[in-house]
Image 1 (cartoon, rainbow, N blue to C red):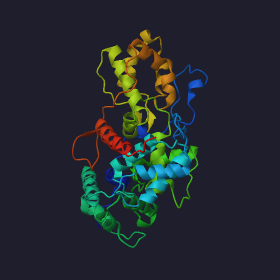
Image 2: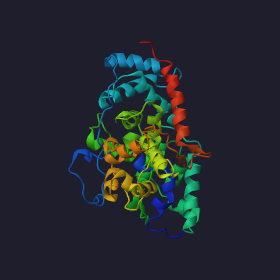
Image 3: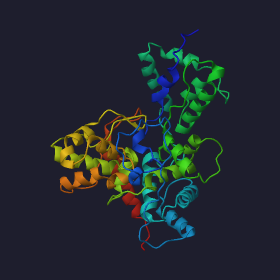
Image 4: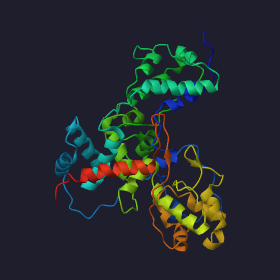
Length: 405
C-alpha cells in the first residue's frame, strides 16, 4: 500500500490545481450588507471580524440619462452588439438580457458591451471554457505540493485510483480534464465521497472562480444572500457559476451592480480584475504617496487581508497615514475606522478620504492598480493594467457595432 497521506493533503496538494482567482478574496468580495457611514461614530478600534463573511450590499448602478427601452428592444440591441461568429448566439442574447433584467441594470450599449468584452476576454464566448493541458496543469501542481511533504506523486495518484460517482477513477477524470466545470465536478465528488474513500485529508473544493466570466464562487454565494437568484437552481450556487446562464448573471452583477465614480469604463474593468473600488483606492494611495513623499505600491488594497478580512497588522498605507495623522487631524483609531470602508462606496465620504485629497491638491480620483497576475495557466508577465486594456479594446470594438441613436 502507498504511504498514508497527511490529514490535510488533498486540500493542500490540490489547492493550486484550481484556476487562479481573478484576484484575491478582497478584490472581488462584495461590500458588507450595511455600510456604516451613517451609523454612530466609532470611538474605539473595531472588534475582530466575525468568522462568516457578511452578504453584499446590492446597489444598481446609476441610470444613464438615455431613452429607456423595452426588453424586446434590448434583445434586438444585444443581437446587433454580439460578435458575428459565435456559437449559440440566441442563448447568449437571452442570458445577457435576462441578467440585466433580473439585476435591474439599464439596457444601454455601454453596459451590454462592457459585459460582452469581459466574456470575450475570459472565455472567448465559451459557456464552459476549455483549458489546454488542464490535466497536466493539475498534476504538475499536485507534484510540486506533494514534494514539500516528501510524498511521491505516484502515492497521490494511487490514492485516487478508486472509483468516482460517474464510474471512472478520480485519477482518470483528472487525466482527461478539459474544462473548469469538469474540474469543479471532480472536486465536488471528492468532497462528498471522502468518507467512503477513507482518505485522511480535507476534501473541500479549492476551486474559487469559474464560468464564462471567471466569477468568484465566494462572490456568488454572498450575492444570493442579498439578491434572490432569479433562475431555477438544480444544485449549489457554486455549480451555477459554472453554467453559461449563471456565469453571465453573476459576472454582470460583479461588474456593473455597484456605483463606481469613474469617468471611463476601463476602470471598472480594472476593478473586475483587482476588486471593487481598486482603481479609486489606487488613486487614494497615489495621493498618500504625494503627501508622504513615499512610493508605496498602488495595488488598491489599503489594509492587509487574510481570508478576506482586514488584519490588525498595519499595512504600508495605514502606517503612512498614521505619520500624517496630525496634518489630517485624525487619530490612528479614526484612520483605521475609515480604512475599514475601503471596499464600499462610502469610503469616498469619509473624513480620511476627503482630507487626503484636499491636502494633496485634489489629484485624480482614478488610477490604474499596479498588480502582477499569477496563475498556473499564466506563462508570461501579465498585470491588471494589461487585463483592463485588453478588455477595453474589446469594449471599444463592441461599441462600434452599436446602432446610431
